[in-house]
Image 1 (cartoon, one colour):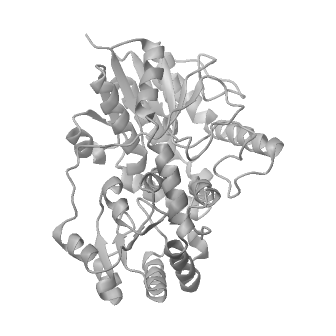
Image 2 (image 1 turned 180 degrees about the horizontal axis):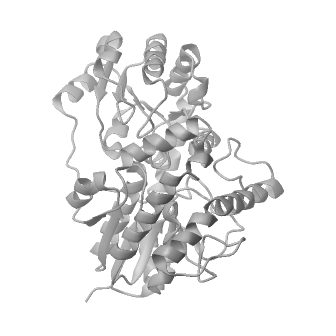
Image 3 (image 1 turned 120 degrees about the horizontal axis):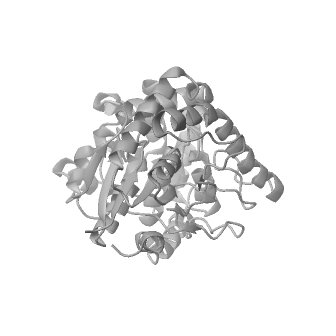
Length: 420
């Protein structure tokens, strides 16, 4: 009987997609795989032939709440309220039950409490990051707006963030260990990347073409390369989009994924004005932002609105990409060899905006809170008028093409539990 791997993730579409790719790779290697993820991704996961275990609440509502809390500077407060703790209790109770019989747990570190589930199950665990969240002197914690403050302060920023998060979570985490898992409490300086006090293997699904592996990371931290989800989507541009693409020069893509932008209509009007000022043709993806087609009617034939499309298929058709700086979107943009103009809103989006700029693959980022039609128009025009941006993006793409992140991740799994 094949060894069973229980994989768990949470968050938005970009937080789930790499884990579908990993699940497919491990299943194709002969392992038995179950992927636990929010219920609204069930159909998508099943379409790739992966068994889905629904966990937690629908992703869209939760991500909306989280982004709103961050935008109102109430993120940490939102993690201390009674509703959050009740959700966490229910979530980890579900995860404990669903992981019965597993030989290995692999999980997004957004579900860091899975280390305690592994302890309760007495099985090994592997933590996964889509961001480089591990102490290093090379760069600051990726939630900072600056890329680096110098070696000492960079390391301090990571350690301070770890301590702050554990201090924030310790109360409900230890209560969950006691009430749900039947385990003893953990101490004041617990390392959330350990199981039974020992470091667990960590996989960073990040390309070294984008970010060199920090020299001071421990051996149990593997930077595998991105996990891209290929296949399973027989997508070609629908007739209306295909016609739009043929009617003029390659457009820019404008999309912000799952990010619910505050004052959505006012932000949309800024984009409209900026596109008019820059003269750009655009494919605009609604995503979770709530923008309706009629909002963009003033752009006439210069804009085409879509619900969504697979980035790996759509981005190569674009002249450039305007996005929020999510880890997955950034990687997909570089993979397509397209320049990017990043408008970050929260958390690690500023880190990925900095990476784009450091690679010389796009104009300076403009945070959402600093939007103004003239400033947006200036960056939009620069995105497609500076040849070096596209050239440098293609150089990164060529290096990414030589990586096989899923194969490297599979090797780590085999080193932990052996062949299927």
